[in-house]
Image (tube, rainbow, N blue to C red; front, side, top):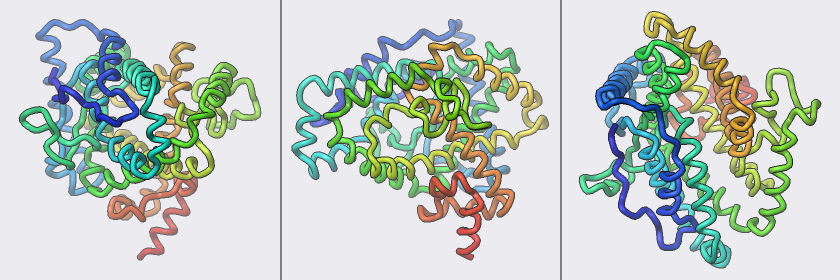
Length: 394
């Protein structure tokens, strides 16, 4: 496996999160992956690198995005679980630093309270625990918010990103599903490489998302005093689950595992901080993330047996595995808002399918041309509205 270069210290002196503690906590709590001999590990890594390379041509053919023709804006890394956690701590630090700097300058009193006392330690421990849990779940991740490392391991500049493929997780899921190794690796890489292409096709997207995050983080700093009460309410909702309210389960949109839109059990921890303005800010971010995830899923599902011979078997067994998680796993996923992530996949995929059907792939691709072409959350739910707006631009 490759080791992602991470600076010796990723902490900012005024950060409300002790990033070094978060990294060390995640490393200690990280579960061990499947055991491989050195030869087996090298074979798994080589197979993933090959699948990542091959998949780009398929993404180019399906998306018709020229950015996929020669991807040089970022790099592909095959990593283990501890390296994935360290890379994400670095990415979070890079992503949140501008937001924290903005809040420090615009709301110094609130920021000073947030960076004093036990808060920075508690937040770091929570972040480390979350990353440790996710380190055994994530198959791959495109990280646009972290600059490519320079020769000394420090970030080389503000541009670029990296695609992380978590080899032990991909191997473990593939063995659990008992599917063809080469087919499964390619299937996974198709989704992840599509994310890489999206940011290459829309170079403005990185700063666009970060600016919205700055707004969201700024709005959170005046609501910390009521956090205990909202946390208790959140935990009660999770214990009860959506099944406690039959009226909340809409056909095709909710289950005891996934929760339902609008029900507290479907909300992540970020919901604890939200007032109406926060909800609007998060809605803009959520709409964009739904687009990105849905588009990647559409590309993945556009692959037929001529490219991935066992694709139907993989999809069937993968979906079945998702539906048979343990009660503890489902509870943790609800706590962390991973159910909302799954809703993003479904909503975004439905949006992209309708948009491509009505406009064709080339017509849909105008979404990558400018921020104003991005769909709103309302348009994600009603893609015909976005289609009509884009047609009006012509």
